[in-house]
Length: 460
Ligand code: ADP
Image 1 (spheres, rainbow, N blue to C red):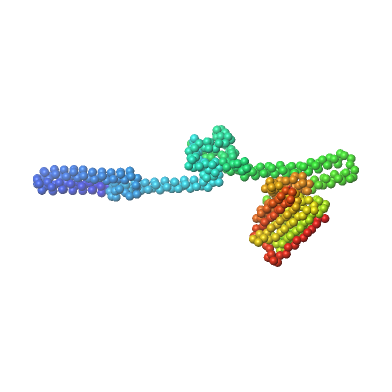
Image 2 (image 1 turned 30 degrees about the vertical axis):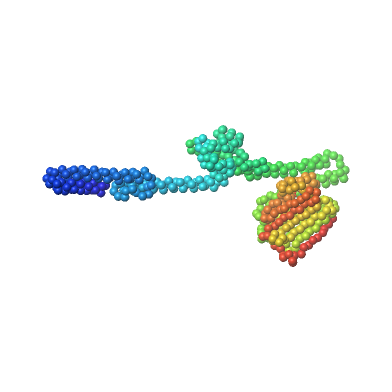
């Protein structure tokens, strides 16, 4: 400010001086020089004001141009003024940038959410949504922003939910990609906030719903499976209690009762096996199980089963590569192997042949296969065979002591060992079930040294 006053005074002094010198040259009177000095000072004042105004105008133009990086005037009051404005603008710009960055981070966090997030204005029009919401509702950012959300999600349940304006709970609606064969269920919840705005959250609950439906089916199936033998048992008990029976009749009924009790025992035992498989840690990849001895155990059990069920013989052949070991749980592998061999025995008429093969393959994997010449399975049933309680032939399964859980157990064991179950079958001709174990779970003596031990056994 002082410099400004000094420059003003200096301008006036120079104006007065120049005018006085000029006057002295042409009319050197004292009075004339004083008047000339005063006029020079006034002229200099105007000149100074004009010069100052032009600097002010430059600053104004600079502010209007919004190109505030380079200041318009470097020095003086206007220079300081533009410098301060530039600093203020820069701080402001930095604050806006920081706020923008924070907003972007916040939006990125919402974007990363596995749940759908939609921000709606007070008219229920879309302001923003994340990728999950786009997937859930089939939204397109270029097309659907500012659209009324209820116009895009045309579900009667959702329309009712929005109309009722009662957002205490969620509403279940089908997802955009939902089809009859692949249903998608969404849980949608609106949370009002701010002045009439809404946050809409959507969650894919298909898996949860399916798990819940499976749990319900499972409980219903188990109850049904247990109730049937229990009802039969109850009937026999009543018969024994009420009817006068001779010894052979009594023995016959007791025999039938024992069969029902065995059926219940098998069911409970398979259920326990399944729950153990689901609840226990994955089988070790360091404990090696000798396949020959495991299959030898199955061979004896299969012979016994064949004799009990059919009373006659099956032609059972076993081709087991000696020295073949698998990493995993012996109990689980036995359960899987015997379920496959047992099924072959149960669904193959006596006299027909059943082949069991276990060998390492060229790529380092190992194959455990059971081929039978039994009744076979029609193609449409094959994808569902490993479902719990799924049976192709209900009465054959029951008559032979089946629980409908055998292949579900096999599937679990196979998955837990990182292996793959393959099923091929032709109705009326026979079935091939095989498990392929990954190389990391296989140890085998080199093929040249390994002997195969094909053995034909007849169950008596
Ligand atoms: P189950 O106790 O009824 O045998 P599984 O889960 O072991 O239950 O098998 C499911 C269904 O698959 C069986 O009910 C049967 O209809 C069919 N199945 C399984 N193995 C064979 C096979 N080797 N030959 C023909 N059908 C089979």
